[in-house]
Length: 257
Image 1 (cartoon, helix red, strand yellow):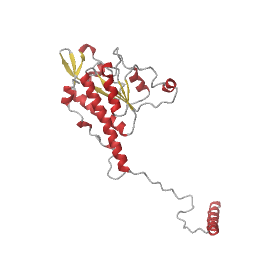
Image 2: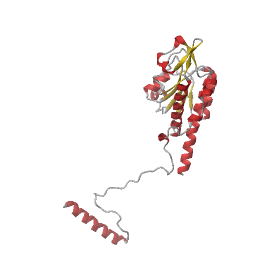
Image 3: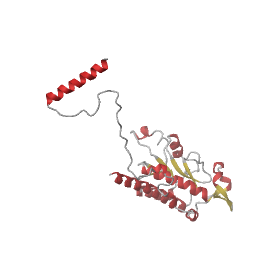
Image 4: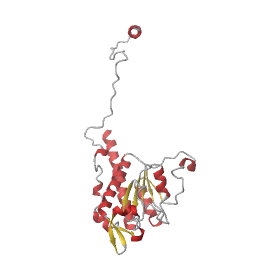
């Protein structure tokens, strides 16, 4: 009873207000609180494909072939005695005392890593290259600069990720993806950066050799992490994946405009 009286009063009040102000408009919606609001969904433009629903939206399978990996010596591992048991599924065999990677498995994991990297770049994520090999420091930094991302090739200070606010005396944005060109430090122990990224749940892509632990890497890529030719190939592929993702993002923004 009280609700109906309130609605009648509201209708009469609006009628008097229109007459006093000289307004002339029609009521397009009921004053009842039982009417559900209509919410318009922000639909994507017609003809657009959802990148997450496409198995290879950025065509990363075109970036390299098995022969490219072979020519870059990606299949060469360390000596037999240094094998980490967690790397056994990626080993094809051995030759002259050195372990040999199965390049079919390496290619599969590398394509997954490149596809994930391209998706992060497509979403506007912050990507950081991390490497501790002095002989390729300039190459890693140059690669990051060419794709407008970040690189860290110096000594890793403990707490850079886990205690960044106190370390830098400011609120610091952590990367959305870490790309480890190698996952060990100078004395062949697991890098602190790998553990810090895992602690902070930061997705990671990493090259893991036969003596490495792949468990803390989100997308491990079994392969040689010592040969300069192989490292140059990794940098080129990841740079191409990032640029491909950013290019697709620019096309989508222009299409929406």
